[in-house]
Length: 433
Ligand code: LLP
Image (cartoon, rainbow, N blue to C red; front, side, top):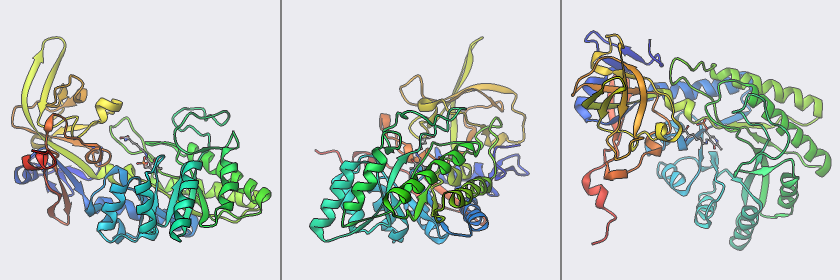
């Protein structure tokens, strides 16, 4: 009935998440409100880990891509579940370290890490710095030499696989700001340079082919290309690349149009390619890392809003206004992303209207979606937008000086605030007199 099995309807006809009444949650904590089911997040972590055990004999590490949703509580959950994390800024790294996260399980990404960020990575001794370009390689080596430090690095490689086209583009230069190109020889040059860097240990290679990918083909193609490169390095430079990080990108169900495959099928497909390539090319099986973000948190989250005014424009459309919008969910205005919405206090009723859900910002494009099927609703009703656990809170803004909503975790029949709602004082905190 709903996009996630986590969402149900109770005897009052109210939508529930993780068994808890969303209308009650809206009353207790106010709206707009992000609600996330911690049990479901943990379940997703376990299913990724189990698939690594089952198909790759556990010789790998699942690192949660924390850009999807970052706050102290989520790093604690990941640490408890035995996952590593991918961080992409000094801010994410700092937040993780504030919780005492095991830094050896942190992958530090970014196509233009600042000197301060590289310094933080060295000071915290993160397990893997994913080096994006030669300039960064030299900068890192120099910093290490000057400070008598060492670092474990991986190179970000462009495998020339574009997961968002139906035909994989494997030839020619893929136009991307991330990583080093295979085709131009840039990647091989970087590997040779790294071998000259006395303070850096090149432990592996990394690639990431895209996001919200709904089949395994692109991942298999990327794994094959990366294994070929590992084999070329072994042959030409006589060194073994110990680790291969295949990034994230596993798709989820936003609306009934999406048909994602079970996560373990990705691991199964990729493991087969790696086992085959390892035999064919005579290279040892690398330690594997994967970086799921969206797939771990998106399906576990919803956003609750209160309905305000309604505007019926005859023969054109009906606008339903909510007390949030692009500030807490910029994915429609950015990507025209599709979402499923439900009137939480009328969840047992049929969706027999079509409405455009509008946010409260001074932007015509500030919408959650257009012509969305929805139960007939009135001012004061609660609307739940589904699958908002990823790239919503983490991409939220204070445009129009709106306050960021609170984030509530539900677990075992209880709820707790993990990020407080911003106050008006928070908004002026950094303004100088
Ligand atoms: N690893 C790397 C290096 C990445 O760049 C990303 C996402 C991930 C892992 C996690 O990918 P996921 O499993 O979450 O698909 N703001 C966009 C998504 C941007 C993804 C950027 N990189 C959105 O809202 O759809």
